[in-house]
Length: 181
Image 1 (cartoon, rainbow, N blue to C red):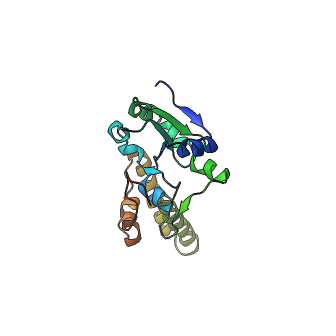
Image 2: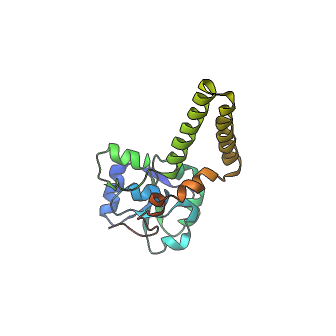
Image 3: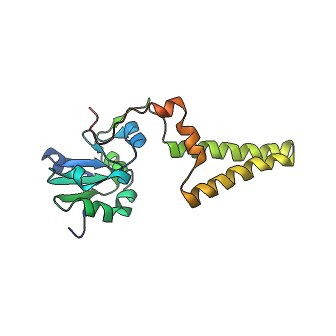
């Protein structure tokens, strides 16, 4: 298949009623927090054609549709033996259409958002302390900024690794490659 067609959330709901498989390519922590009932968690990084065997119609989605669009080539490579679609607008458009989702508010917010919150707080703290106490505290902001730059350039985020060790981040209930009942 050379191109995967985009379909609306309502068309997805119809296809699901006919037995299609819905694949959520977001990370397991995002899936655990909120997902479409019956969706299967298969993060894009681990997506493999063997996982899709036995499915005749497969629909992929993420949060907004950007990840699925960016990974269309990988998705196409995994769907040679089935009919594949991408849900236009992802989970956000599903919700705008008034369709149901399963939400588990006991799950922590995504690790990326936690990094953004902590980094923002540390930078703000460094600036405030630098202005009010001593200019040496500007070093906190510089250190965090350098860490973010390093993470962007290398893909390794030390702050995310540290935050992942917190007890509430290790207790994710999502088991990828399975449906959540």
